[in-house]
Length: 95
Length: 479
Image (cartoon, rainbow over all chains, first blue to last red; front, side, top):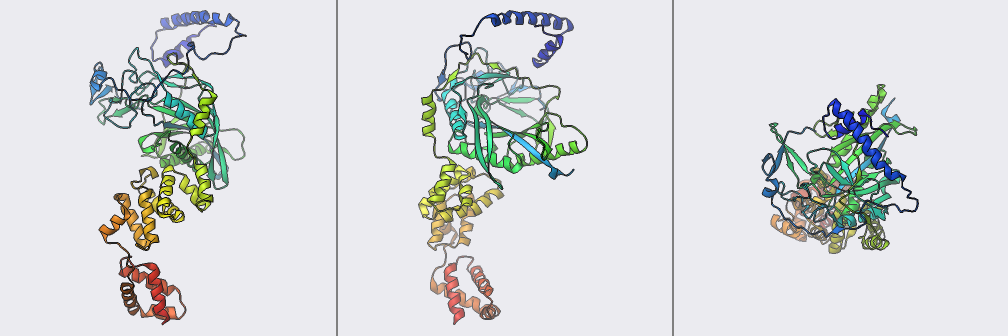
């Protein structure tokens, strides 16, 4: 199963990446190889295996509904490149 | 072709914030408001290396909501990531549910002019809310507040079973009322804890295929939802009538201009690349767990309605009206207990309380007084302490100043005049001033009595006991 240049462009757009022509070619090849590698799993016979949800066999790992506040606002915002009035300041977003 | 030849087809996606104490995947409070970024932690701010842990109450509340809307409950469920970029979504993905929602295949019944109608519910799933973006007027930037990020939501998806704006409103009010009764959400539209996206399409009546649909977002009141549907359905009909085609797109409703606007680049087909969240494990619900929740469900509106009809003597209309809101229903029960006159209590709720709320553009949950006050008000009328005209004034006052009615009456000097001597004096005065009406009455015009009573009421500023007035006027006129 080969990944086309158009598919790379679509994925790049969804990921907000600008790729050069050379990168698009290279990623199309890389992604094709990755898919082929992952497709090996399809050759395993799973007729006798139950369907699983996720790779972890654990289930029902829950938390109690109790408030715990650990970190204050100043600490949370300390690495923000820009902040104002206790909020992260970012380039203006229009709808 | 006329508009009447078209049918509107709608389905709803209703988002409802759950009233858990903490967020869905971390222990921060969900409380509305608060200084920006004070209900946050490294998890809901998506700091690298943090891990989500699911709040057990979120599962419980979602299952409650599913059971109360006749859904099947999944025995195996999981969380998935929905990927998209937006600055109010710090992880750049929303943890939601894709192919294994907690609840599926349910329904609720709504009242329509043609009788009861069933609206099917496709699914209910759990997910996290996004943060809030603030914009300033000077274009200096946008400001991100993540207090709401990670607040638990259920999303209730309906089948395209709705055919009019009235049905949409009835369906939404029904969901709101059910979720309020089972106490999984406070459903405050004005605080954004209940939000609806509406999928709208139109087709010619009798057509079996659905038309192309648009999805409208950003409506935050019943009024704007109804207006938005009206606008969008008309817009689509105009496009079709002019030979055009509807484009499938997401629209933003603008309440100020009363129009819808495209939200995204149309070529950007939605592609969320859902996949199971590897940070979270499967949810497995046992029969026992589901059965326990089912048994603990509080009384639902349908059952309350039955009780009001059979045990409290309300009419069908009154029982429907009162049970439509938990707040009305609780107020009704409390007030009826206080005064022992459920019929009168339901009348006050249906007529004056609903009217005043409507004028104030408020919802029943915003009522400042309780059934205790309303019950006393009805008792005071029944005992003859105040007339219903005065009671209306007291009620208006209770909206501003939620005191006990007896206190309001005392403070305002509104106690009804039931002293026979005082009323006789007023009657005599009115009879003397209106000889024509007296003659009219004696000539067989019964209406003249009403006029005389009205004059006496005016004279006493509405404080005279109306039964006594009637009685004394009749006695005098028969002389």
